[in-house]
Image (cartoon, rainbow, N blue to C red; front, top):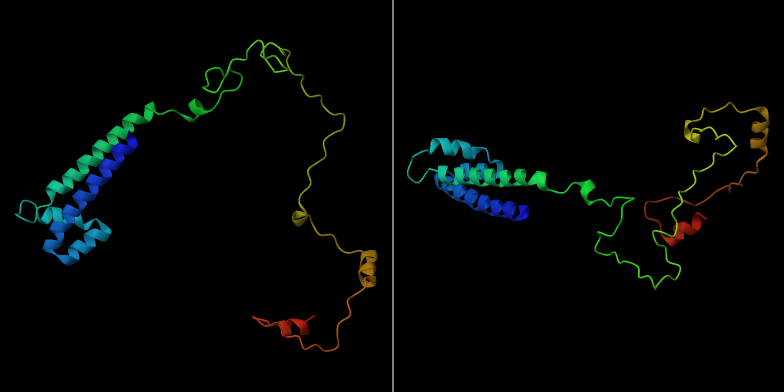
Amino acid sequence: MLMVVITIASIVSIVTTIWSLVIIFKRSVLGGLLSLFFGLPILYYLITGWGKEGEDIKLPFFLNIVVWAVAFAVVFAAIPKMPTETDLAPSFGTSSRSSPGFREPSPSSGGGRFTETSNTQPLEAPRPSSRPPEPMRPPESMRPRLPQTEVAREVAKEAPRRPRPAHSDCVYKPVMTDEDMAKCR
């Protein structure tokens, strides 16, 4: 219903706007272009052409306003009747017999199916663990950096390094051919 009202209001609005623009274009091409792209100059042409034969745009202008006022009134009147999110959400703990997909289980089917009377005991609360929870630690990027110790420096010195070639013909370019890539390997 609301979509129909908004669609009709949009169509009537487009028609009345074109009607107004045709009258304005007859008066001034520049004024028509300004009214087409900015909209606000329509008010100038409404006031300056008031009551003049062939220059008056008050009928399409006010028809446009009335159509949108009626459309907004219909929409705002329908808002309290619209279902809310809580009305549409499934409610837990209630019977689902009101839903269209629910089928009553037949007494003969049995077959290990769950029924409402088969398990009526409440669930047990989870038991607290005897171990205290671990404290939260900040990520590595937020931890303060500690100064390197002598041991860490010596370990870093002993790490084997890749040997560098004495001279290489490798030149990195934005677009490299296979030959260029082979030189860099």
